[in-house]
Image 1 (cartoon, helix red, strand yellow):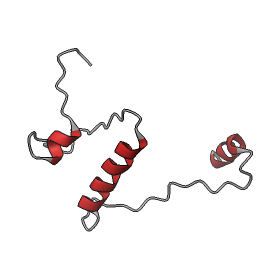
Image 2 (cartoon, rainbow, N blue to C red):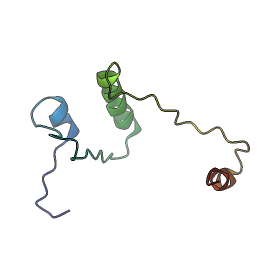
Image 3 (cartoon, rainbow, N blue to C red):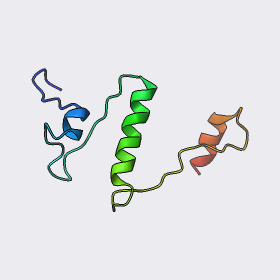
Length: 80
């Protein structure tokens, strides 16, 4: 992105200080700074806001490998 690319912080959108996406062609990129509590808090806030809307999809994001010591093999088997 160019140096003058507009950056809007998530807190600015949440508090209504700035507008977020205006249409479906725009994307939201959440660039976390690596603090797990901030990431978790942001995800919980968003989940709670959309829970009973058409935007909410429950995802199973926990891997359940046959052999936890062979994660690469699990990825290889999933290609088929």
